[in-house]
Image (cartoon, rainbow, N blue to C red; front, top):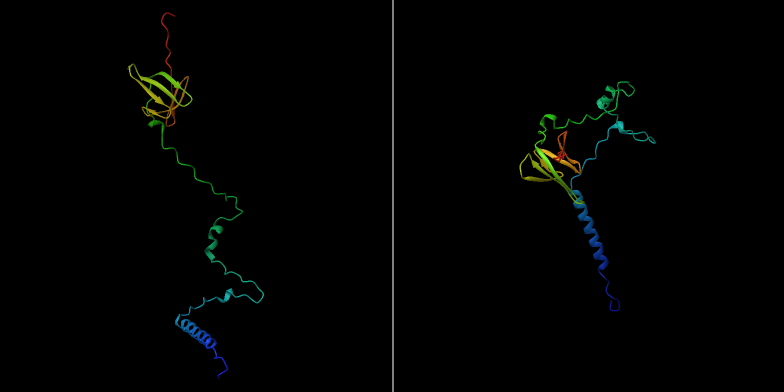
Length: 167
C-alpha cells in the first residue's frame, strides 16, 4: 500500500448526505396532515370521450324569466325614474329690488361691474357679475342694464329715463 494514493471519502459523504435528506423529507411528509380530496357527485361524471356537463340549475333560478315571458306585448324595456323636481319654487324667490337705481356700468376686457344706488340715497354700491343683491344674483351686465336671477325668476334693471328740462 505504499505506492497507492489513499481513497477519497467524498463519494461516501455525498451518498450519506442524500440518504439523510431523503429521510428528512419522508419524516416531514408523514408529520403533515393529509387533506381529503373533494367528493365528486356521480352526476358530474361523463362517459369516455364525452365532455363534462355542468349540474342543472335549481328550479327557482329562472323564476323572474317565467314571470316576464320574452314575447309578451306587455313586456317593455326598463326606464329610468324621472329626476326629482327642483328644490326651489316660485314662492321662495325674493321680491325684486325695485327700489334700486342703476347709476352706471363699467365694462372692460377683464371685468364687468355696475354702480347702483338704493332709492334716493347718496351712497352707491358697486356690484360685479355673480354677486348677490337682496337675494338676487347678478348674472349679466351689458350696456343696456343688469340681469338678475333668483330661482326660476328673472329681473332686469335698466337705466332710468331722464328727461332734460326745457325740452
